[in-house]
Image (cartoon, rainbow, N blue to C red; front, side, top):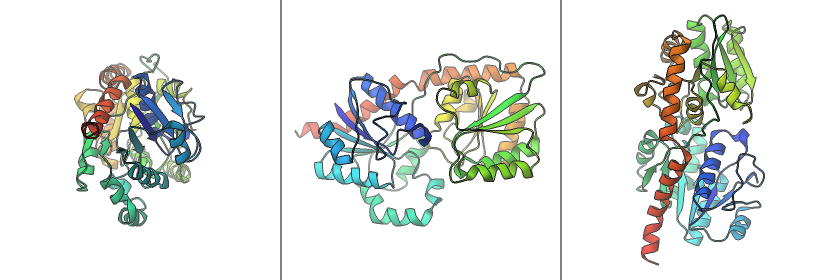
Length: 365
């Protein structure tokens, strides 16, 4: 099978989608699927987060050049919506009569649709709805995202395959000793979608004794300055620290120093950093903007209302736990991720979707 996978970027600075698309491609290539990777910024050629595999073909140039180099695929697997390259992939798939799968990556979720709403309404009318109608399948990474996609009434099959999660080489056990500060960690893009103002207000309300909050990740749209202002205005300068971007070589160490991971997000289609934190044995506090209701069921975290009140109550509960209790929750989370979100398992599920998409084509060939 040959699959041409397209995405906005494979650079680490692009965030979760760059990792999830790259890792899926590598897992498929390990199953001897011939995978071509292309991004409009040319990053497929040089991205360090892609592994070397003879079945993985890094493609540069424009989209038509990439297709010419790779040869005709059985499937186009496009990631994202709205962007010019998504429109170009849709046109090329129509012209070549090659089936196209679209992974929407949370870009049609209610919060995302309200962000820059007027532009999106215009794009939806002009081309985006039509392009999705012509897709052979829509891929969601969680049940909540699949439900959202079905509300659009497109009549296109929706299939759910979660993102996989990388397993760290080793987990850290109890992360705090008597007399040392205890750390809660936020690690993601510093973007208005991620809910940091709510977290700062909630932290100021409860200000857990002996705890510090570390905020790590790349700044987007100047949001860091806004959050820093809120921290100063709340009198939290001594207990809230900004670490800046964290590259892949240092992520494990940052997770390893934390007893609690917090993602106060307004909207996630999956939440790669939640899976990463759990894999590193760190219990998670996140909001109902992320599709992780299993945190409470599995005893590895808190899933709270997407409000300051909800985050505050979650923080009070989490920071009241002693280190051993949090470490036990972290162990449960690590076991859960290893069982459910291994990349081999995810690749097998995606292959099932590919085969389903190709079946009608094969039967008429």
